[in-house]
Length: 99
Image 1 (tube, rainbow, N blue to C red):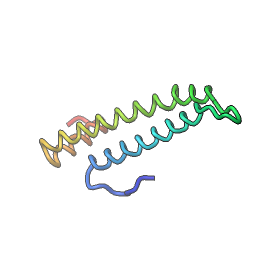
Image 2: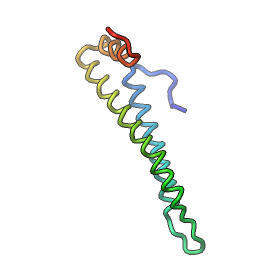
Image 3: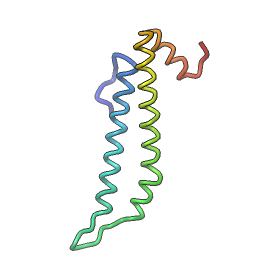
Image 4: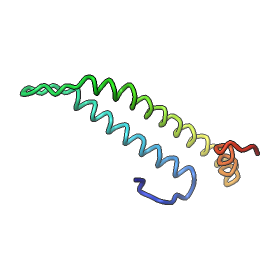
């Protein structure tokens, strides 16, 4: 679960979401590394799981990270230029509403 339940701004929430996505991606990469390691006493290589994780999970993780990073960047720019109004407009656009 996230460290916080409430954030000072949407930007802070998006930045924490991006941090959490990055941690999940690192955990998946660690599983992949463990699956690829060759142990001398018994062979625990699992290339099928590596293929499954890289094909299905990592691609989705990277897409999610790019999406969140893009939204965080856009929101930051809007807030820098228009302060609270920028966050309001971003929220409305995110919900698909016309302003």
